[in-house]
Image 1: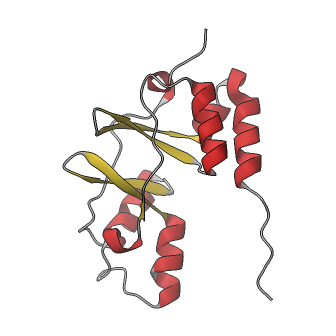
Image 2: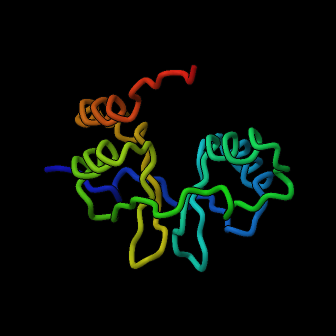
Length: 144
């Protein structure tokens, strides 16, 4: 029998709001040793902010992390799963969407998050995790 996301997801996820500073988000990422944090408003997942968002949309643009809000750099329109979603289905969704982290939402509220690493630690899902990572990690060509 296949597993559901609720069996492997991380619960009690650290979150930020759109009004918090990028510096606060980066500090939380450092404290939690994570590369992304879901962005919530009234419990609803409205986006996700990643270390890449911070590097490309704040630091590289010469913006001040202390004076830039998460809402201005986050990725919105986030792909989500549900606690009852089959892990195989989630792995396929992550591969198709080219994402490494999948917020898990129940009744509009953030319930947890699943990362590709969570799939990889489940022996029966190592192939799916590898396939998802392969489709995400397409090498890019440097701009000449």
